[in-house]
Image (tube, rainbow, N blue to C red; front, side):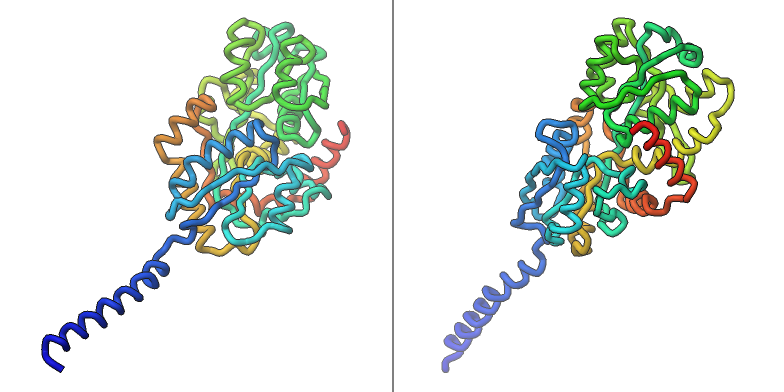
Length: 359
């Protein structure tokens, strides 16, 4: 064989080897989610607050995931929001392509409600968002914040005794010693708000977003209502702290000291302080089925956190809610999920009795 033919043969062999090796190397380096579709499952109906939150977040999330997979949102309401978590724990494939992004069912886990079979402590926590809450009152009987301590026959409206708005509202009002009647059975926050406008209800606990866009521009600006307090976040030390996104409304602790002249105390307050981080710090939670591959979980966690720091997402959140929902990281979220199953006996007994007395 001539030298020229030998060189040509070597060149062809080298090019052929490179041709066949390149796809294998590319596949090895290919992101886990490249070319795939991730489905986010929401335990709420289309057009609800939880549904809109998931769809807005999904639009930004898929851009942060290496490989830029498709991401779609599917609604799975039912069971008061527990159906979607049960499905994820018992039925969904643990491949990283099925993720629940829905309002949590923390109180159901604490109370060991039979309708919730999923164990959040066994499901990888990806990330969460806090949706701050606040309380306001009509000015018919309460002209100033301090008047709430002496007003008689106030009516507090809610949805269900185990709903977080209802539970947090009752605990706060009882900690203050307010004279009120609990009126439950409304279908949602908008229904309670309309009942307030009709004069049927005096006090509502609702989301800060609802307050910014519905309550403040109408009832408050018209002088028909005043804000009372917002529910605080909880630090790593277990102590509550005021939220910056609600700085114009005092935290419950600030309100209590303002009208009573001393820090909050008493059994109802201690129960409020215990339950707050477990039902209020994580409102929208992204959780994967048990057994989801660590690589997929890690990628989803990192990309979720990246979304919350993205300026474009923050700008859209500001327009949608009037503020940016405070994020909850994977480690803290997992810790809070585990704490749902570490309930002191006295807390479990109190909460069970407290809820059952109004059921």
